[in-house]
Length: 96
Image 1: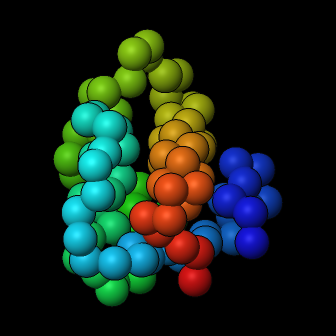
Image 2 (image 1 turned 30 degrees about the vertical axis):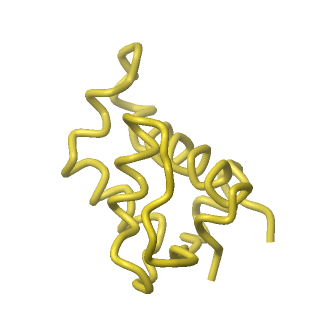
């Protein structure tokens, strides 16, 4: 299944897991936070759980520009999905 940033996909609360327990080389910042939110292998995490775990790591403080409070909920999930899609392309994660 394709990781999408559509509202319907986000509302479906997809679940993800790491594909292995070795730590891959990652971009610093948001991608590393998303990876840490997924760890440890083989735990399965939903998008909602990932958003809570990323927020606990102060993910929102890494944004380059301020996000309007009304859009923050959706923007956070879309940002996480962007990094998940990139990690999936590299074989680091899979959707369950």
